[in-house]
Amino acid sequence: MDQVKPNCAVTLTYKMKTLLPDDTVKEERQEVVEFILGIERQPPTLETAVDGLCVGDRVSVRIPGSEIYGEHDPGLVTEIPKKGLIAQRLREGRFYRQMKKGSLVSFKVLEIRPDTVLADFNRPMAGVSVLLDGKVTAIREVSEEDIQAASEAQAKRNIGCG
View 1: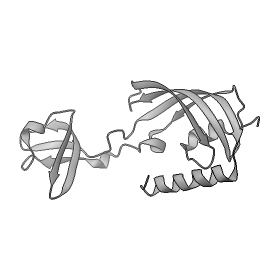
View 2 (view 1 turned 30 degrees about the horizontal axis):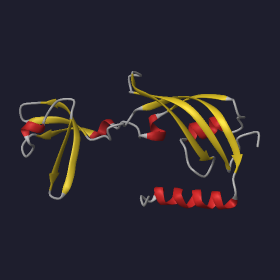
View 3 (view 1 turned 180 degrees about the vertical axis):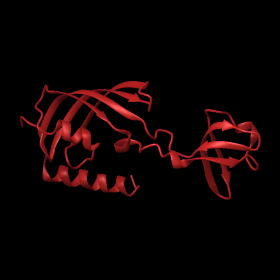
């Protein structure tokens, strides 16, 4: 197989930089991933970028936060009463976690005020995007059994069973 296309396995060696909303690099790592294009879902930007590439081709994409961690929602930043919170756990810039009535309450403490806390209830990585620089190192045909197994595994991940 000489070109990446749907329902084929592609191996990608890549360096990934995690970018905070202000474009500062949070972390950088190098990995190798193999997936069946169109079956084992990847961020749409990456799937589009590798479709049609050949072994040895390079790819460089910025994957927006909306495709991986979700956008940062300003509506989830709110002022809450300090009463009922454990004072020793309140630290600006840190995550606060507490079980209340059988549920986990979790938020990032943005600011501690006299009677309230400015809390960010967004997921920790919301708004974070990724710069991915990689190279296609292998492309191979897959069997119907491979596609079936990958489809079933993807379905389990989608419903939280695997």
